[in-house]
Length: 318
Image (cartoon, rainbow, N blue to C red; front, side):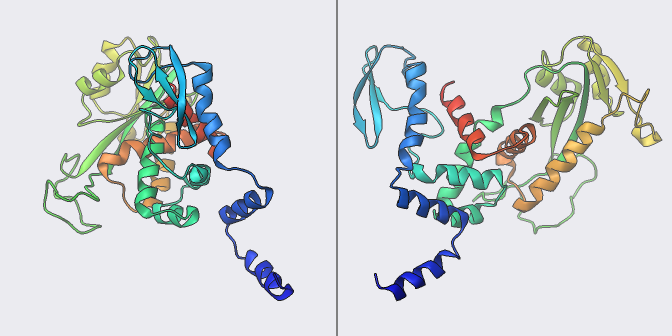
């Protein structure tokens, strides 16, 4: 390379993105970006060998499938890899996964993530919802102490659907009916204790029966349930041996005894909706994935791509 071409190359390097800089560094060091990821994925087969088909622990190495180790079960005789029957199955370009997870931790939209990682928009969409399958399942299994409960509403959206259950409408149109219309709104229940353990659920409606079906066994007995004046919480608290502190927010009663309130849940809803604004509307069928995504970010003191990648391995091992 002539000195002039080398000088031009150096000047062009100044305009590289962070992802491109990391790729140049990897190329110059001669490191294989894929192998460390494969090693991490295959480590669970070393720690707890198990066939994903029949769950037998009697497995043998059985050649290679691309760059990954292939295994064969002695019991059912089927072959598999470390990602078989997991959300990561059949996903390519493993060297770009960590960069994409970094985009997710930064809350970037699909097109921006696709451009940053140099992948197709459809690939960006597929990866996002594959990687979100675990965070959607990470919910608090037991809440105790002072437990706050409240629901918030999201506009029902069929964004991306080829066929609609209703007539199409323009963005920003008002709801046809007042109040909690099932045609226009989707209620999301959020229950959170003072230890910041959070449980969320998308409900068809907020009734005492729905609350009992969703939360039965998830709140420790003799805990204090704080809610607004919605009557469904009264019957739920009585049927589950909970001390109920009912806040009449409409009358200006927002705190009882300077301790019992639902301000933590309301603040959580405020942060959630502010974070969701960057996506310009979320389809209702994918809302649970986005709730899990934010829940994961909210529980991490310093969320990074490695945290989310380790979470994917956790799902692969379950």
